Length: 194
Image 1 (cartoon, one colour):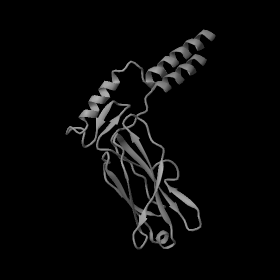
Image 2 (cartoon, one colour; image 1 turned 60 degrees about the vertical axis):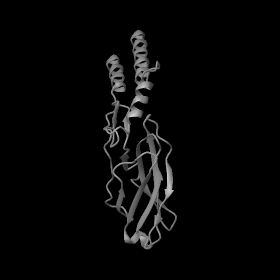
Image 3 (cartoon, one colour; image 1 turned 135 degrees about the horizontal axis):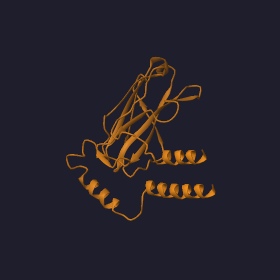
């Protein structure tokens, strides 16, 4: 029985996480003070990525402040630490705007909206994690080894594709190879103990 449990755990560790590259995500605004959240459908490298957040009349009239916590992930699979940007209100404090500059190697951007109430309390939409994701115009899905985005087919990603292929010819195995090797050794030691 123990061998079966160990084998099951090893198989589960080797199953890749299934995620669909290039699919934007958004969160439900029901039950929040947010009326709408608008951005572009794709984020271009080295360009401003703007956001417009509309809050309800109650939040606008009581002096609620709005900020935007973003996390940019790049084509190598690394995500930068989240950064918070204060948004600027219009004259009636209903529409809040801001922008950030996307990284040269941006794959996608995650974000959430932060509300600071007049009493000093804060809330996030969503409460945990990031509720929105917008992919770049030139992204690389490392799990599926796939390039995509508006610039992928018209030559905008061609140089990045060639660079990625050169990197892939290196001699060091990736995380999957290391995990497989460790799993095999661990299974051998477990089998030997019995």
